[in-house]
Image 1 (cartoon, rainbow, N blue to C red):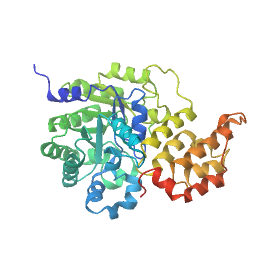
Image 2: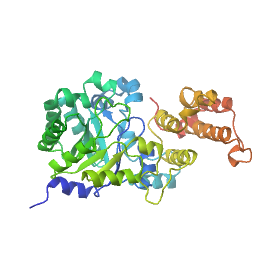
Image 3: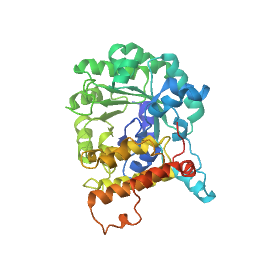
Image 4: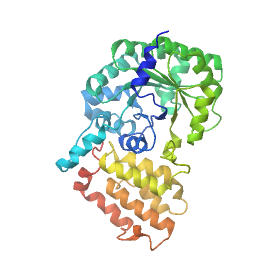
Length: 387
């Protein structure tokens, strides 16, 4: 029997086994490159609102505020572009940009017209820089509930969700996939996955938690993931949920028959999650140093990306070091890569208490770090776009 074209597409993607999840304000290029260097085979962009994406082209000024939270400026994150430095640096930057593939652009939407228009525009503007488009049918957050997208579109209007995908698949040449959550009812989940497969999706990512499990906690229903993989051998299934180690990943693949596994929180906590040579998570300071080094070469679309990544590792310092926490998490004067790099040196010095640590050489005070935000030239040479 001839191989289904969807498996052929999977092979064109390199038959990925370990996937970085779409994460709002956290799966930007700098983080993607960081984890690709440590075993990740394929990455998703942060979730992009289809309507904001469209407006970012037609009337950029109207999405300035929204884009800060919802990441409409996907072009900055996807297209190779030269940092405004030396010619040699520019050339190296463009070469390294090629490492950010395969890459899947994820949209959320509840409107057939907006989703199709966004897919069409993405293919025209970004088609040479991405390898597929995904529809988010799994977001369980309150904003998704209010907006009628994500898992709430799938739960309340499954036929419309399928219609969005079918319409886009008929319009664009890029492969179109979907990411879903499970229902308590296994059969209902399998039936929904079957409808997506019938619509022509290239692959399905299944998060094995329900809509009520909003905080990446609780039991992962691997039996439902396995049931979907068994029911739909014609296309790849990516398992998602509860992956905190490479052993977890291999266990999910073996136990469900899925083609690959996706991790989100697990990768945020340990960038070496999928690295075969690493048995223990990296020290948080080392992880942040790796990320900050890449973020220097690949400036995120807004400074909030850097803030959120560092907070992931050091948000716990609030009770003991409220002054450091305030600068890390809330201070609006923190506007540049250099400021956060200097802050992390101070955090490490404060937490380790090691005066002989080379990190203590030339430490800046919190006031000095804050004052660095007044240096507009640093801002322009650091993180590239401020909304």
